[in-house]
Length: 453
Image (cartoon, rainbow, N blue to C red; front, top):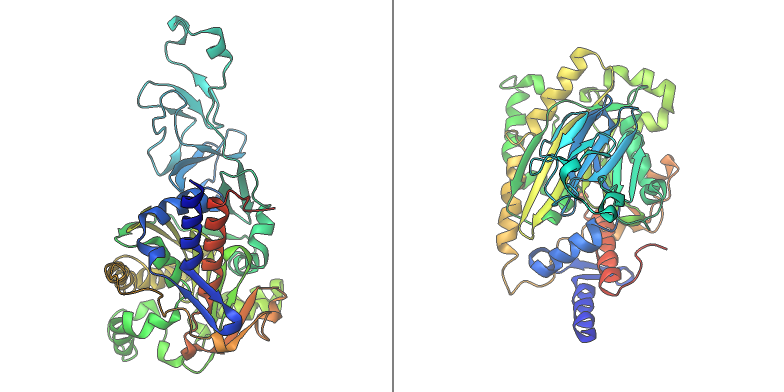
């Protein structure tokens, strides 16, 4: 048994070849195709760290709820009658049946569809059906029949996170300096942000880490989305959907851009925006400057994508959007995507935002289908046995610094590393943080070590 664990630890250690002093950082294809590694990810990553659950705007009123997952564990997040948020394992205590199958709604009580046990919006069991004639033992009646609360529920400025592990760090410590990138979204309005009602949900036949990579990967743009660049060129001549106010991405080459790695696997990429007047917040930028100052307002006009490890991305290179990804199998991933908007923004700006969002991000838009097809192509290619270490994590390493570069330092944050170059550097440095944390958590798990001290 010890030999098996040592062998497994050796395999995981070999999956990420992290030798930065020698200019080497690479990931082995096994990380994407090995079913055993996938099972370990569920147990030692998703079920042992913080995972994003949803946004507070989805739970406006008492008794509102959403359902989601932490790894393979179904989760019910609910606001009780007093307005307090709680998060519970979404399974009836009687026979383990899924209690609530609806994705979102409002309910004072949830009734198990199997045997009719009833739980209120605070997770309390309020009825054992036919309990009076059941002949339950005294020991059973003294037992706890309520829904099982998760170990931790955290709220950072409306973004809700949960963990099944009692030993995780405080949420603020987990987010660290990456929280500043969330602030750049939330502070776009004095009233915060909300998820626009509605969402897109789809699956692709590929590993979840392909989406983890793609969210901080500027390098794929010109090939993967070549058709969209052609559409943009026609729009600049007045043809097609000009209401989308699409950006001229060809103007970005040569402009400053960079990548950032944070503690706990979070990462980000950013770029200087040559057309800030096409940003939906542009009409409100003077008001924003008066609240947050020139530096943060200027950062809001930049394009920014941030990944909060392991299952959340906020992309704000076009119009802000939220992605949540859930691994279903080693080669199957579920995606949910939402449009993020400032609370109380004028109708014209909301329409502007939605046209940009649906144009690029919707499954029927110009980008998401391209990416999903390519994830599936990658998954097929990654099954090729002659492949070993992939060569897709090296761009930008020559610019990398073990501190905040001169642009990132204006935010007053302390990242693990940063790399300042040009947009056409197409840096891949932001892959390092997630894979380093991925490996750390898996090794801690198989060695029987605590992942956090």
